[in-house]
Length: 336
Image (cartoon, rainbow, N blue to C red; front, side, top):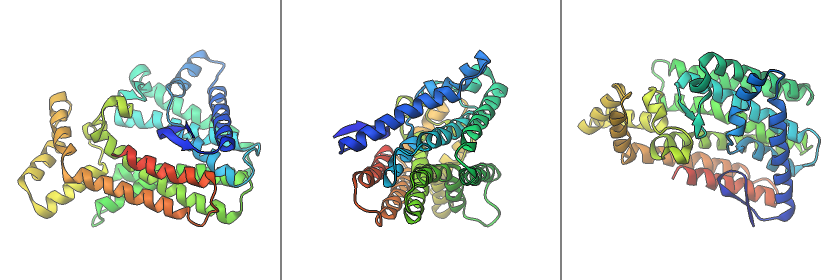
């Protein structure tokens, strides 16, 4: 049994381990190649987050999903590079919108070079992803375009907030499905589709990826409050400081509105106040870490992870299926 990929995933078969390790190594080379430019500064900026590391969660899903067909099909590695480049590009843009200072344990691109360079570098990565995608055929282009539309729509809806009368928590879960679930679902879909897996298998793995991606994002929400910067790779409370609604905060607000406990109302007022100071942020984090709202967010994370696991049930038993199921456990463990 060997640990590979993010979260200490255990692969219990030598052949699968070799395929995954070889595939991820090829993806890493592909990412470096795709982020090279004739302009040295562009190369430096584009490779900033690539070289900072990362879980390579989406490429791993491509590799595991390809095991249900021909894992050596020529488009597998390029498709994994496409989804990771797309993900990296969104991180550059997210950090600008969130005014984040740290990403993956290093200074964010916007804090190092400014917002304009960060935005344009993200655009550069999108362009390189599109160039690779064109060689995978029109169906792959269409699938990626649809996923990207969902991703951007989710981001816009998050910024706009829920329409009048809509439950903010339901709205938020829909946003997360678009922002994160869409690209994770495409990772599984590309791996299965390009490997030549049966259409029913492609559909199952796409559904699995959608749910797992949402669970993964909800785990991030929990980590923003519950973790330290060493564990999460970014400053704890970043979302709180920027006023970004996350699931624990939405549960807190719902509890405050429904029950009216003075301490909950006071905590909501603190969240609505100025959190630019470290002392104020630390106090909010301290109180949220022991609040039932955080526990509820963890339960929601578990629910989506279990839905992802259940989606795998029709697939034939194999080591790749076991690894995908274990990823559900790893996401839950990540949320504590």
